[in-house]
Image (cartoon, rainbow, N blue to C red; front, side, top):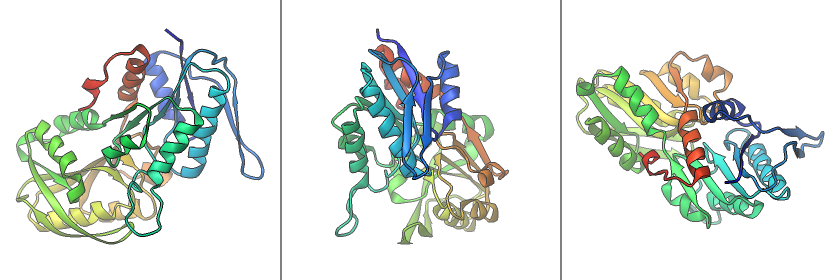
Length: 313
């Protein structure tokens, strides 16, 4: 079996180090610099010939820089005769642009898939894709694992199961929320959301009875928190006891933190697929759970040729 090596760019080095700690291996040595004109320079300092390479890189802000870093690192190890290259992206950027929603627009999620494949990736490991169908954009194997085991354990440890109601913030997230509710043996409610413009949402009604319930809104990501805060307001107006939220990817851009602080949401539990910005890290409503062991387990099983089925909760 080829030796396992892990490298990372600048997007989420803390998560990469946690994963290496779980795997009990050293993080590979690589230099990621930027020239004065903005071009990115990559240098791999370790011998990668005939080795099994995993590059950990979340495509979070600055998205384009992190994407180019990942592509260049893949190319660098490919040209250094690596045996296999796996792009491990806890957060897959551009995933929301997975179809044409208007004339003359790109399908950006597909373009990113093509770029990764062309650069030389042999396999993809990612987490909580915005749309599972994005796996079909690739002609190489894709393992889309879920943060649900980590979030489920947190909810089981901190909430009374008999009072929980899982909330889907929109119709598109019903399947995800239903699976979550099933594992908690909890009820399910849905927010009827009308989106007026990109990153602007207005929650209109709650479908389901949330009276005197602890409502937990479950989604794959939180960006500007418009959906979350509007949903929380509608849920409280429908008689819920309190509102909490869970998501895998804390994008938290723009006014997200201010909206959370001003909202009736008592807590937002997220994972470290994306490192929190300073204002989010300082927000006492936000709690971060680590997915390092989950991703580490996916890496070691992929490396050894073992099944990942038990990780697809």
